[in-house]
Image (tube, rainbow, N blue to C red; front, side):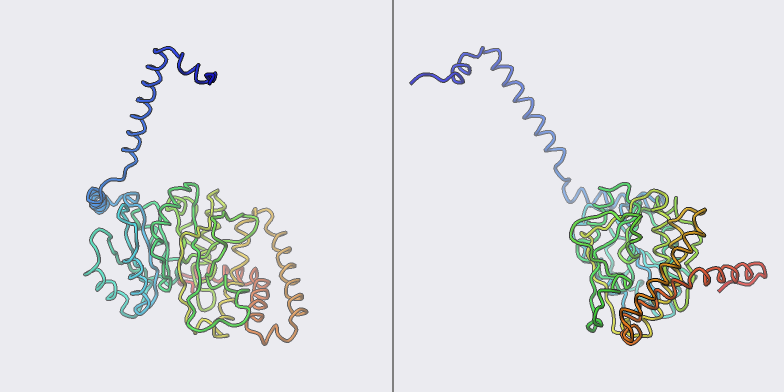
Length: 390
């Protein structure tokens, strides 16, 4: 059989070429081996030693970047709810290589919250510090600000005392923060754990109860869409918060029976300063929602507060010189929504709980500019007279 041209070329190649090729192959092989050795993870014993060293250094120097991640639980009278959240954090998987801590911020509780933390500290693993902090100013915004001030890591994750993170939440949070250095904040994939079945059509208002389901792929929040993640399950970059968020938030104090919009205010400040805001579906968690959250009175008060806070959060993404014009446009749009809602649902707009919540949101969004202007006036008057504004 005739010899093929390729075989002839191979057999007739000079020996010098063969030696050079073999040398290159050996060099390439050695390089691959070195890279493989470099990528090989450190032994678990070495990882533990390094983590313990970093923890000791963080305690000694109080450097905010000493650890990888701080998980903050903001709680008010969470004596009964807090243990379940702490148990979820105790069970986290894949954190052997991380130096992280847990901080419970007690937001002026009057129950046994402090004792719960003290009991857990006695049995808590030493390589994951469990810290307790007390914030006397009422409001989740104040509690989160306190946490940012005392955290010892570049990434700070926030959980409420009714949030139950999945077993890989901590690792997923750290990985995403490392992979997206321009992300100032990124939210979790949050599903409800309902004590009783929610009312019909609850999916229309579920986002207002911090439920977030935006698919299985990460996505960036477009500033033009006016949609942002809630504070529950939110991880923020401490640098972004300190560089973007004012020490005193406009919406930190209660509007009605509770604070409203202060979480969106924080994220909007970051977004306005050029930081990216993301949705990370790998950070999965359950939001425990008791039956009391579905009571009509509670929901209507919640939506009233959200509506009254809306003018401020809307204006944060608007140039100041456009403020008056955009205020009028937003008010006209709110009025349009009210009319459309009443025409569409008629009597159900009041009788149906979900429809009534939507109508309440539209009405109080329309009233929001007047409410906030009067609120600022009261606060200014209180400051001038020496009284503490409520």
